[in-house]
Image 1 (cartoon, rainbow, N blue to C red):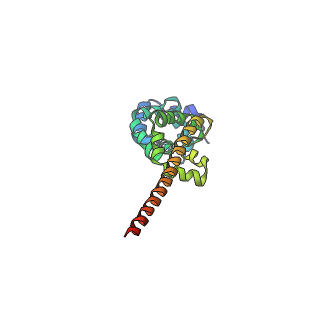
Image 2: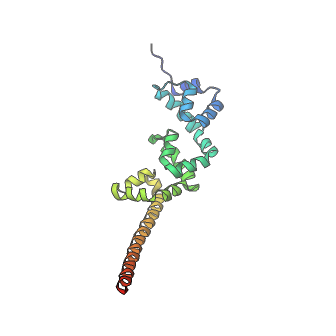
Image 3: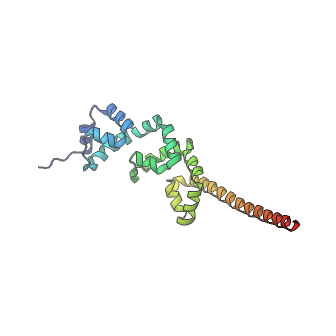
Length: 191
């Protein structure tokens, strides 16, 4: 006989009276530690996702984590980009898009981690833009969807400014090299 549980029954079974302990485990060990603490086997993603979604959407665990570790998350996004944070919290699935949008707006925009990440990675992003196209850059920065259009325009402005500066610097280098060649030739003719 196979017994089935409703989602609420699963949540009650795994969570009942343990919410504070689960929060502390989540904050210290992340989603994998939470799964282990709850004793949910690796082959039962369905159960874990029901319980995990409850903690994320109902109990707002992710916002508590963002508030507590915001400086760390700014550093992570600055160095590795927005997708790393989605991976850390195991919220890559589309059902977490709205949840992550809030995290992105706070860490990436308000705390400027996205812009710091872009400024650190301009050459890579310009190369990606040139080789793979703008959609690849947009995906890399997790700016997919119309709700990110205004932010995407700002990113394009940053990339365009860097590209234009790069082109000016290349022209200036060319002019300086030509000037020194001319000076060398003049100098060599005098002796």
